[in-house]
Image (cartoon, rainbow, N blue to C red; front, side):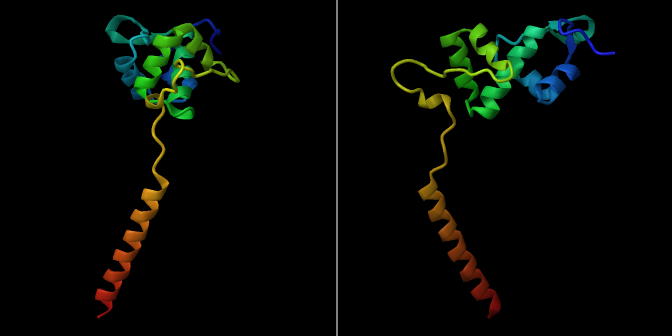
Length: 136
């Protein structure tokens, strides 16, 4: 029997719906003060439909958009939880704007392509030297 859309979800049900493991949901509770499931006897967590929507938005921001934990925290502070939570809806878009200057610290830095190319070249040269030594 399927649950009503307004029914509370256990952590396993919420994790499945969000697409993140249970331990990740528990970790997010420690990093985001706006993730507060209802706790019943024995510490069992139950997530309201709004909680699941917030978790989906957090997952999308962290995994799909590449924001850092601090970036999501700042986004909620700047734009409000309701606006960010709406991003948990399928097909929803969120304008990530933190004011006049782009917030470079919100997005994980892209690897320096040139530096990686140099490291790869150095590794290939070292490998060639090792192979030459081993052939002797």
